[in-house]
Image (cartoon, rainbow, N blue to C red; front, side):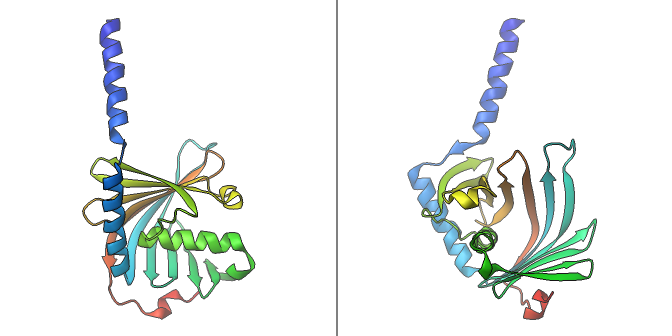
Length: 208
């Protein structure tokens, strides 16, 4: 019986380990090239999303959903529709917030940390964020998908974001999941689906 249990543990451990395999140098180069080629072609992108907010003191993740819209070079809007109406728009160096009709704005220019986070979000959407100067990056293969893990080098940014994990569809080379790990055990996981690339999007969409 003990032998069977030991073999079962080894099998499970082996299966878990196999889920995440480090890429070779050649695989990393090919992956980055594929992603950058696709990223350069993306002029606009709209996608539905489901966001899971994991808080260590809660037994169940907080689930919200909505639509994300991006237009190059840096127009970005997250529209939360369930369970509440809330939007965050990145536009002209500002963060515009509409909370159930209550509007406010934050000037990104007054905060380097906001500017960095804005760059991270836009980069994570377009997939164009392989900056070795800003991050320590590691690359993995996971069940037909590719995974890139980014650890910020900047100490100030690291206080807010411990690690960013981007999961890419292997065939399309586009982001299908974004995971932001905070300095605590809390994290936010955003799953993107029903993506539409390069459809016409009017600038008026990005009004607050």
